[in-house]
Image (cartoon, rainbow, N blue to C red; front, top):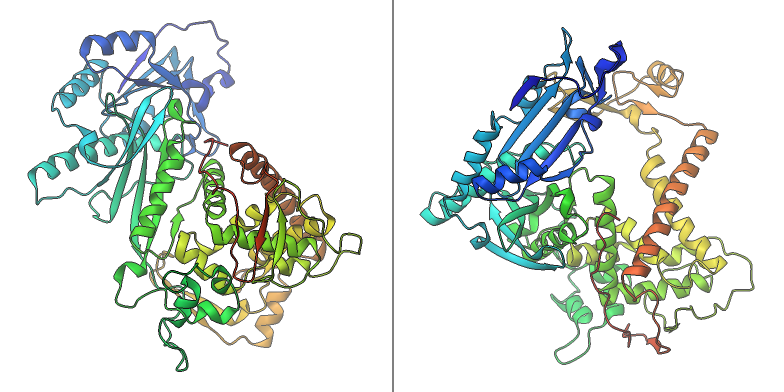
Length: 573
């Protein structure tokens, strides 16, 4: 890290405003690809690969302003191979009381080099150790047109002491992650550091095969999770495995898809989580996910997400969650999950049945009723098309508990997330939005989910609950039921929209406020679904089939459908 006063590039009127800069305008990032001293010096002269950051509030406050400097320029240089960093700060004039930039960057970049020469020497000496990062566990390879083959590697971050070769590799990768981690704050909103000594942390790296340049990363944590449903004994009248046999089919027979998504008691009798299987009580969580800006749009983020889901499946985890996903991350995640559902035959078959039921104005979940689906891109004409809209038609699109149980167990999509993905899958089906019954049904499905997630807790029971802080810091607490006197209830109800009586704060809304907020939520979500539908239509053809083949879904749920949906995603949608 270096700082210096320099002649101003241009004369700037020394008003108070001239000493206040937007951090985003004065901070520039430079990635270096070279590996030798001479090449690095030449690349620095050229400026390296330049790009800007997105978030600066963790360094400079909510306003993201830097105060006290005239004609300030901050250049963050780093190696794409080792992530050694040098921060070069220059200005024309510094006022007394100016922000302490050196201290701010020292806090967030504790291992930053003090000079250009130190950074170059550190890069070269580290690369001379000849540790080949591509020789760690390779879990996938992603071909790209601009960067050649990219390897996705997996490694536990905590250093293993058992094997000398594993220890050397782990130490190298951990050091790279330690130096890369401070950059996350500029590109991922709300990200935090992780404990690299915890053996439950795993690291996925996207590594350019030809030169081991690190293009992206993803950290995963293996949580122990309390089972999300009770482990109950099988009914006495039920033969162990009978329900499984009905769903899976006897040897040599086709799978009975309808049985698996039929009546609620079919799957609720199954013990999907074995009490002796410790992995069944684990939840995989993604924490830090970043593809460096120069390499975004190559599908690397999606590939790492798919690998994480496969890890959850292979380990028998309850599900996979993402810690505080950014809007871009959430869009990529939801699109990937829609494609996962669409490429799972029994889910797509059920979506076909639901669409036809909604078009016909049905008001119940279509578990196994035969339907005909036109595969020409236009839905079959609904029998109730000329009739009035049917109240409760969204029930034909609303899955029972058994559906969510099987979906989560198979695809590892968290149930709360799965409800959003299911509505996106339905919204993308051809012919649904073009029909008044279908559009009304799916819109109502979205509305009910948003209302349940934002307004279901109306405060009617909050006054009977009390939070007790155990250590006065809020980090440890218990919640208990408490008796409320009529005087307390009256004081709570008269305190206004947000009432605090020593118990849980209860936020109440008038009917007008609720209607206004619901309209905002609906407009936002329907806009997201319209965008998702367009992206899905462009990226694969499962939602715009060109053949004229009819798909017959009979009582057994079998369908002669086209090829499964391809997992194709344009990143940063």
